[in-house]
Image (cartoon, rainbow, N blue to C red; front, side, top):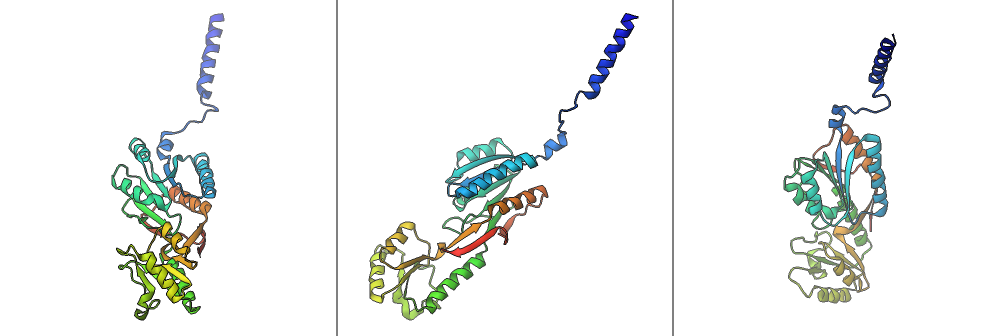
Length: 283
C-alpha cells in the first residue's frame, strides 16, 4: 500500500514537472531566430556629436524593441581592415555608411564582393571632392537634392551680380565660368589653376586692379587655398562647398527602420524628403 501510494505521488510529480517545465522561460522559435535582422553601422569621424547621440540611442532602440542585432564602428576616417574583417566573419543584412568622407573607401570595400549585404550610403553634407558613390545592385544612396542645391547656388551668384559686385573667378580650364556670369570681355577677371604656380600672385594683382569685393572658386579647392585668399580682405566663396545642410537624423533613422521592417529597401538614388532635411542654406 505504501509503495503503491509512493509510486502514484512520484508519477504525479513527474507529470506536473513535464507540463510546466517551460513556464516563465521564453522559448524563441527557430523561425524567429532566422528572421532576426543584423546591421553594420559605419560612421565617420566628422559626424556631429548630436548626430552620434541620436544614432547611439537609435541602435539601442532597434535592439531592444525590434530585436535587431548590430555592430557600430564609429569615428572612421576610412573603411579599414577592421571593418573588412567583420564582413568576412559575420553576416549582415544591412550596412549603413554615414558621412561623405567614407564613401570612397566604402565603395572599394563593397567592390570586393565579400558580402551580399544591402549597402546604404547616407550623405551627411553637400558633395565634397571625391565623395561620389558607385550605385550598383547592392547599393542605395540617400542624398540631398542636386537640383535644389544648384538652384540655391545659382541664385546666390545672380544676387551678387544684381548688386554690381566686382567678382574675380578662380577655376580649372575644364570647368569654365558660365558666360552669363563672366562674359568673354571680362576674361581678365578669371584665374586658371591649371599648371599655374603663380595663381595667387595673379589673383592678388587682379583683385587690386579691379577693386574686387568677391573671389569665387568655381572649381573645388583646398581649405588652405581658401584661407590664403581670405587674407586679401575680400569675401570668398567656394562654389562647390557653398552649402550646408541641417539633417533630421531621428527621422532619417526612423525611415530606415520602417524600410527594414517592411522589406522595402531599394537600390539606386533617393533624395532626402522634407521631413529628413530640416534646412539647406548658404554658408
